[in-house]
Image (cartoon, rainbow, N blue to C red; front, top):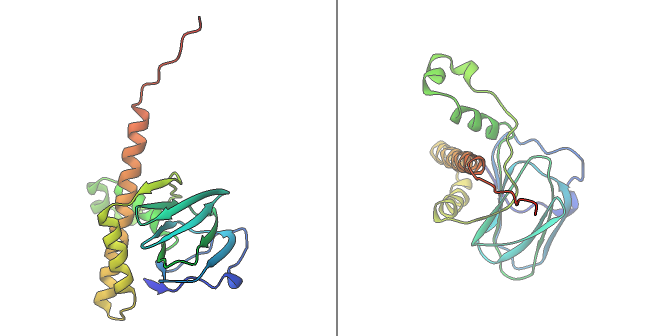
Length: 195
């Protein structure tokens, strides 16, 4: 996993395709200045503010974030960032480009199939989640803080631990998305009868 300061806005590419990451990358930095990044195409990831607040626009819908919530952004979505000049600590975790599809595929595959034919059981599927605000829970916040601490380390143990944490974040997202999808199919909608 790479740990990086927020990207320099003047070097953010405004191309139409999502950037491809060969590693997971966490952009985070404690800032006390105004930070604004123009609209650009994003990769799949999680956006939050560990301290302070900020405005993030995803596909022309503006969301206010603070340490109480986070936002999932899908690959090829359009993102712009506006952090006011107060003390803030934005955190943008973008996943290795194929990892979300691999994790989603592996969680939806039986253990028997994974053990019998691992090479053909897991495929890189196109994975997306509804882009909306989610309440921040302590587990995710703690994992992001730990990733920020581990990301600066160069030991193989720190790198392995960071990869395990990132995968657990993705697994939680996939499981929660699957549960929400199943619940939505079980909702009975009553139509009003015409009078």
